[in-house]
Image (cartoon, rainbow, N blue to C red; front, side, top):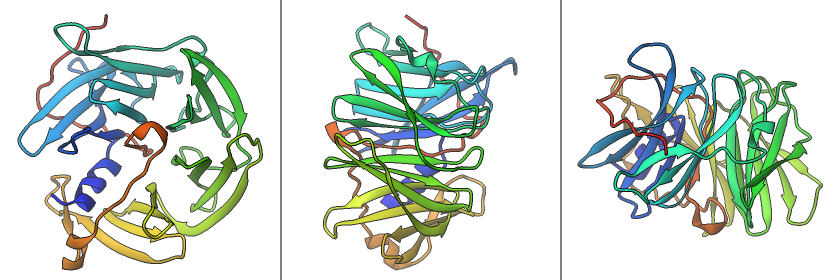
Length: 297
């Protein structure tokens, strides 16, 4: 499977991250439990040779996004909204004999109350973790975490429709925040370190799910958009290329559109501290293989 096909799989998930050795993916989905009474957040660790499922949390909303931040395979955190539309977090505990996901909702995190259709995104900026969410008024707001404590950091000066996907990206000392606006086009605002002012622009392309990367070789921002089962790249100069499309067999896998696609190398530089993550709106409800149930600690 080439990089474009892997990226398309990640864009189809509720949340995702790449393993630190580059040989596997962590893909999140929202799945109805065995009793059909609640929804679980399931992590699927996917490699070429093995698939393992684990429960991250229970009591999820039926659909949503779950930002996945990974520093190492042993240091991971996932943010999600529960069925009461409150922001929660889970971390991966490797101290015991049975590594497992456990609740990590720290002081102040519950102050982020979400819109019932709102999505989440997150990034690391310096020593702080930033989580962006759509609040009950429909605006995009931010909550900031540092040293185990969380506090609201205000709203962004943008307008978005209900359930709009969004994505933050840190390049150097500048924070980029991309989102789908009310015109269904991809927009972005930026803020420099130490500043409270946001500056905006639009890429002028209608999108649904997306991720944005910084191409260091060409010094360009590139958006990768999944819409209608086709993954397309769009750079800030307006250059556009269709990369892969979903196979018609319903397997959820993707195939190359042209032979030229096979030579494409995708460069992603997510943010500080080498966190490799892409955050996409739109969770899925699916049914997979039997999974390992993790107990809370």
